[in-house]
Image 1 (tube, rainbow, N blue to C red):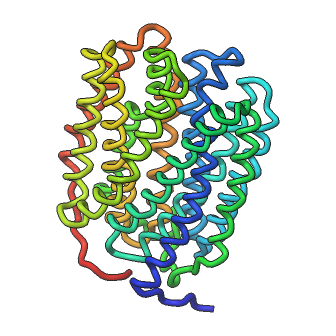
Image 2: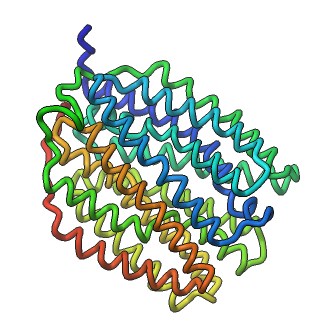
Amino acid sequence: MRKEEINEKEGFKNIKLLGGSSFFNDIASEMIAAILPFYILSIGGTGLAIGALSGLREGLASLFKLLGGWLSDKIKKRRAFVFAGYSISTISRFFIFLASTWQAIIGFVSFERIGKLRDAPRDAMIADYTKRRGAGFGFHQMMDTSGAVLGIVIVIILLFKFNLVFKSIILIAALISIISLIPLFFVKENKEIKKPGLIGKKRNISSNLKYLIFVCSVFTLGNFGLYLFLIIIAKERFNSMIISLILYTIFSAVAAIFVNFFGKLSDKTGRKKVILLGYALFFILSASFLLFYEKNLFIMLSFVIYGLVSGATASNHRAFVSDLSEDEKGTSLGLFYFFTGLINIPAGIFAGFLWDINPRIMFWYISVISLVSIIMLLFVKEQRLKKGIT
């Protein structure tokens, strides 16, 4: 049966429902992510273990992001993959609760990321719902990040008001993530997907899109999950877990507040300008750590700057890929997630290795990577789209 054509208004209603699922899922996800560095260190892990965690939690999931995108193009259905992905993440969090060693925690966290097979199909749905993709992806990212903010606030309350241990917080997070499945029952599939994906006879993956994905992957070499190390830096500087978690909350709040703004701005001015701004801020942040690593005021400011970086880049990367992907949005977004996710593995491990030698060496490395990314992005060709619905 032919799927229903969805207009702009109906499209944004579905985007809001997808945003609702991400909101509750990220409450749970960030409740766990916020305490993971402390949990791992408390049971014998090192900086290398944290670096491996930041890489593996995205890197191993990257294959499933590509698979989800390709399959959703091939069988011409997306909602089923989104529901399956959130279900896998929910179930996996109960296994994280049962883990007792840092190796098991990293293993189960990586397994939980298999649920990320939902990402490319979900983003393809958003891209199909509206041509105002900056606004569409920006709203979804805002809901995602708002859930993260609330998740961290809940962790702070549970830790310091109710004195709960880490494992109890993980269990509560797993229970909350069940709610993320409810909005998905009301999401509608968009119109018929026209073309097969990666193994189809005709491929619409342009050289410009491939280059954009390559640039994003290079940027990921430096932006591998830096927030995990910022949390540890704050803990060391202020000798307080609660201050470090409050600063992490500020990072997430800034990202949530500005992501929708940057998404709408990219609809007006172009994706590349906004992403360039994000890359430039990331370079300023990483280079400033070489000068002001011992300054408490800068440590606090760094969480704000990194929030702006996330707001400017996270959703606009996806919108830019969608702009250049023609009809194979699921496959194109899957490829984007695959390569940027895969690069997280060596990037996180290498950064953790440099951190154990000297944190400043890690920031030298990040500064060079971010500067190279800025130069490379200048050569991506931008495609401006007319307003409307696909």
